[in-house]
Every structure is written in structure tokens, then in C-alpha cells.
Amino acid sequence: MTSDTSNAVLFFEKGNIVSVTDRREKRSDPLLDFLVTTGRLTAEQTEQICTIRAQSKKDPLEIIITGGYLPTKQLSESVEAHARELLPKLLAWKKGDYFFSGDEKTVARLSFKVPMRTEALLIESMRRLDESARIKQLYSPSLILLPKDTSQKADLADEEKWVLSLMDGRRPIREILSKSRMGEFDTYQIISDLIDAGLAEVAEWPAEPVEAPAEEPTARGKQLVPAFGIAFVVILIAFVSFGLRWAVTKLETPTFAANVPQQSEQFQKNIEENVRFALEVYRATYAAYPDELTRLVEEGFIDSKAVEDLKYQKFGDGYRLERKR
Picture (cartoon, rainbow, N blue to C red):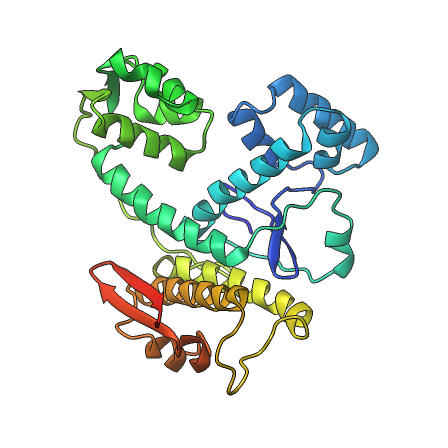
């Protein structure tokens, strides 16, 4: 996926996202940038990795493992953290282009894969979008912050201490975000928590921002139209995910069986997760959760049998979903 200012590559295997590294030559790999930003690699180490990559044509993640730059567990955690940071940004794009390749050999050549449930990542991404919008309304990037009460500092996690140390009464939030070892969402969340706990305060409010003129829409191939950008990307990723998974799980996944009093616990969990995912796709499409689960069936988001044993209640901007007892 490519926009005017950014690009991203997603690899799918059996319906799961397994990698978000960009292996194209002469391209800046967002994952390597993320590892530097979060302090997992230094700029010098990244330069070494890129040099080896250019000479050997190897996957950067293979170089990181074989070169001892990071242990496997930490690299896996980093790949997941980057995916959680990347997908909300993709969903926020207002326009862009996509290219899909179904080459079966591509994923097989990946030397390092981290299977991540696509539905769970999308649901988490949409939750982050909502929460980020709420926090940014309260604390704009132009705000300047100060530490307030340092007596409780010993009880803070290392990440919270780091963000608190960046608050010196001179740096606006946008600079704190750029220097933070965490991603944007996690940093904003920590800033909000520190202020709520009385450990930080606003030192200076920004001047009233000058509203920028609205951009004129331009015609582009495969454009992600602003009004439907989130729905488009969600449905595109979902289509790829479920399309690739179908062939693999057709024989592996149990179907709804007639006259069977109780399906396996894992089967029920999978059904519930799929319904939650369908609810998020519905909300992305229609800007609200449905009043009834039957709307998901009517719109073709889910099979009617999937909702038979579930209780659903919509309230405000949220919902409650649980199994019938």
C-alpha cells in the first residue's frame, strides 16, 4: 500500500499477517525505522544491516537474527508492536494505492515470520484510532508539558519514567512523540495517564491554530476516498485475510453441525471473534454499530448460524456481546 508520504507491505499466510517488513531494494524499511525509534537498534547497527542486505540480498530480519543484533523473542515482540502501530496509520489514510500479489513463493521465502491474527489486529487498530482521536482532542501536539509530582516516580514503569523525563517545559508533545521509545499511540496513552494521575501538567497552551484550507480532491486510480477510507482498507485486508485462509481452513475448521448440543470451546471462541470482527467492519462501513446482530446477516458480513447462540446489546458508542446461557 502506498500513499503520498508513506508505504507499507503486509505478508499473509493462511489468513494471518506474518510480516510487515519491506524487502524491496532501495526502499526504507519501516520496520527497521521502528526498531531504531523504539531503541531496539542503533542508527549505526541499522546502517550495518542495510550494507549487509545490499551485498547479500538477504532478508533484514534474517541478518538481525544471524548477526546477533536482537534475540528471536525480542524481534518477534517488535514485529507485533510495529504491526499494532502500523495498521491504525493505514486505516487513517484518506487516499492511496494498493497492489496485491498472490505469488505462493513470496511468503515461503520469508526467513522470519510472526503469525498475527488479522481480525484481532484490525479490531485493536480501530480501538486505537478511537482512543487516539479522544486523547488528541484533549492534548494537541502543540501542548508543552511539565512534570508535576515526582514523589510517585518510583512506582512508574520504565516507559512511563522515560516519557516523564522528556517533559521539561520546553518540548511540545510532538517532540516528545518523536523522541519516545514507544509508538505514537502508546506514548499518547502514557501522557494521558500521567496527566490524569497528577504527575504531569500543561505548562503552556498553544496559540489558536490557523485552519488550513481544505484540499481539493484529485482523481487517482484505486483512490481511498476519505469518507470510506477506513471501511475500504478494513474490507481489503479482511478480503485478503479470509480469502487466503479459506483454502487452508476449509477442511480443518469444523462447520456448524446440526443437532450437536455443544461445540468445542475453541470453536465457540472463533465464532465470537469473527462476530466481533464483523461488528467492526460494519461500524467502519456505516459509522455506527448495528442495532441488532441480524443486520450483520442481512448485510452479508456473517452467517446466520454464527449469531444464534450470542446475546448482543448496543449502548452509546459501544456494545456488549456474550454467549447465551
